[in-house]
Length: 346
Image (cartoon, rainbow, N blue to C red; front, side, top):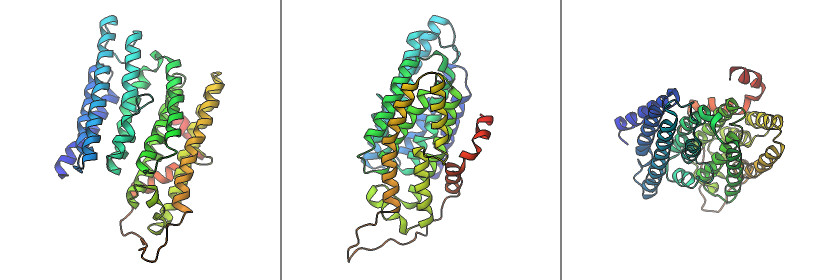
């Protein structure tokens, strides 16, 4: 890809995200989302592979539909209430349309169908952007409008997202699809607490972003796209594979790693709100995700690849490790003891 075009797309991505998260008017938020969509399309289709073109087409159609619904929701609310302020969402139809629009943009069940396919057709770096930065503006809009949204609908969508994300990730052999369904399951955790403690939704998103970024950067460094190639990564950078295993367990939410913090706080808050059934359901469904994280960790660290006589063993790579990988992996593993400070800052 042309460096100038890549720079323009990246700067537009940052600009669109900044406009949306800092706006209090529906039109400026919508403009920021549109800039984001147009900026990421060249990055998805830059390989010129048929699968990449298909992914960019699917992404454009779904995001255009979501943006149309969001604009219609804001216009309906302005028609009935005379308010264009994001926090003044009062009309029931506008609340329903906005929930659908943001769910499509995020990839919540039942609007998840596009997300695994788009990630499968993109490069690892683009997948990282799609799974983290591109979800920040819609999460911000959810955060600003959370008092107006239907808690029953959000809880139902959250539990089904956690169930489907865990269930569909079980039989995947492509690492990008595994992380796509992992993202859908984590979105369920963010959504279930949105009505009761929106700040906790943001904390969960930040920690999910750190951990997922670490995993994508490690997979990009080792050039791993399938489970069968995960088995050979231990010969390339052995220390990095050990950190990869710990990062996967952190994403699964096992103590004493960072990923345990948001799940612990969400279960605690749901129990305080007397939603014990929802807390129990989403906790049990997280065991499905734990299975495929453990399978990835098992393949990376314990399983040996087939050793034939004509098999050429891959030895340590000369590719330098990204400094961001070190930062994100450290944060995704060792942040739990600092949880009081994290809660104070938030």
